[in-house]
Image 1 (cartoon, rainbow, N blue to C red):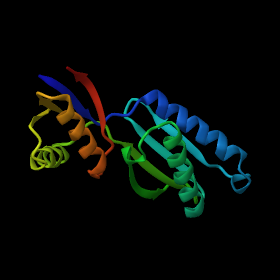
Image 2: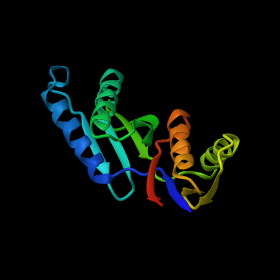
Image 3: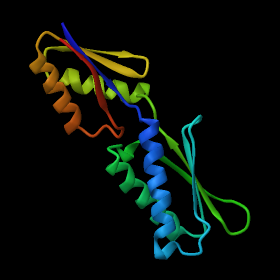
Length: 163
């Protein structure tokens, strides 16, 4: 039986590289001259924190961050933008969580979509991943194509393809 796993995980090193490049871009941009904008990554808790002066700069930082993630081949859907909060003074702070793993509700949606497709495969939820097994590789590749076409709202990767 051939099988593969559907997972949702972020490579922390690639994320760190994307954030470092975003920091460098912010330092060199003319519209951020003399600003006190900061991006901080907490690798242990997988959270980002953006601190800046106003909403315009906050949205610009978010756009820079998204573009840098795309260039590092990280899906920007992994970012869970929280609410803005005012820090000390007039500084604006935004906390961003980085999603890891597939939640139960998302896993149920994915398994339902696979079963509704009519392909001769079995999908089972295993903690924060989904294992798909089938007799033919073509059916497994059809499941991968189905998952790529359908927007589940989370980034998906396909690991451990075994024949």
